[in-house]
Image 1 (cartoon, rainbow over the protein chains, first blue to last red):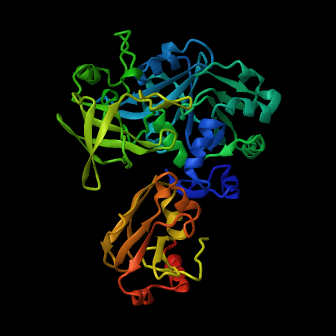
Image 2 (image 1 turned 180 degrees about the horizontal axis):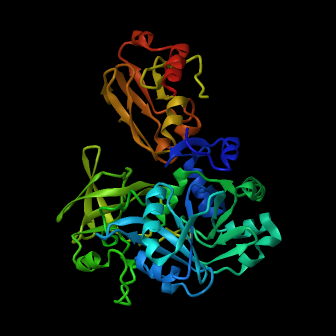
Image 3 (image 1 turned 30 degrees about the vertical axis):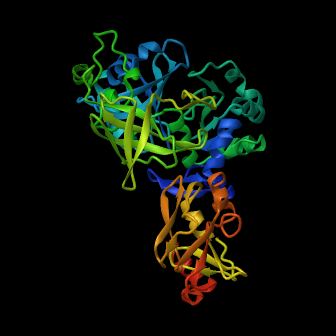
Length: 360
Length: 131
């Protein structure tokens, strides 16, 4: 029997179909994952993401510690509340996890890491933090609700009122503390919205207040189709410890400058720079069929594999991410149930703010 | 809890069969099956005029989750297919016994229908698969 979040009964009340996810009982959908997907693109939906891991890092040397730990550079975080998406690499430049780090105060940074990688991340980060004397504290007793969609912010303010005032001026990729609701204008859907981190005992009240404003509960099934349309990677599927960011479409998250910044994994990563034998690309099907993880990809330069694939409800056809030989051009084929189907290589994202990013 | 209309026949592979007044049969997948598969996105149907034996795979229903073969319950010739499903595959989820029907067959031998499961036998089967 998996762990339950503070919102477990709410999910049951909304007819959630519960499944195990990283040892947690989570709703995969509440009836139709496709309808839930459309709801987020058109209006507003809310996700229980309380299973994710919140770590607070404190100490005088937190900044230099993070400059060493992360492949992206926290020196980009100069304004209070600013967030940074980064990979955390091992010594071979393999990806341990992807995460968001928020600069709260000079000696306090908050990190949100994946649920499935919780134990390994805490162990790794704590070990690396020791010489810097940075304390790494998991914030338990917290729930997390992501409210996403074109109307998400308005509905959140309508639901929660005055305490959310500080968030009205929030810019994208910034966070602010609204009393005991840590409010970040971030998300995993390609839509505008908030990710709220709040005490467990407030979770049900906030969820119900949002529901009263017409924010619909959204399950993990739609979460996956939304993030894939938005071109966002899923750790454990699109990358893992055996793949570098350069082979995972995450080269843009690496801060090479300043050259003296010695982050973990820098050296093997430098050696690969411009020379990776594989790359992660986007694929679409123009005809019927669904692209799925692990399907074989065939290009004139060799074979590859789909890492994430699905039917895109917003576009009406299949989309995928695939790891393919680096020289692969604009065409390839995918083996679907023993037949070879033509696929087109595109650069993600596929959808942003509800609209297709692909050329017609 | 899925529904299982009493007046239909069923297969172990989760198809339902309805005898029409002209002797043809209409076939679809059950409520139990559509619930397991999730939101449908593509339906591959046979061609009118195709002939199948009992147990042949003759259609594919593809959901966000997985593609699943649909089997022909009895031998016969396809007389009609539900072409609306190419625009609205979700009818298989919303009305699996109604507008979500898949295809119609002229049976080679109408006695073959007697071999199929009745509603209570199918309900037992569906329940035994739940865990």
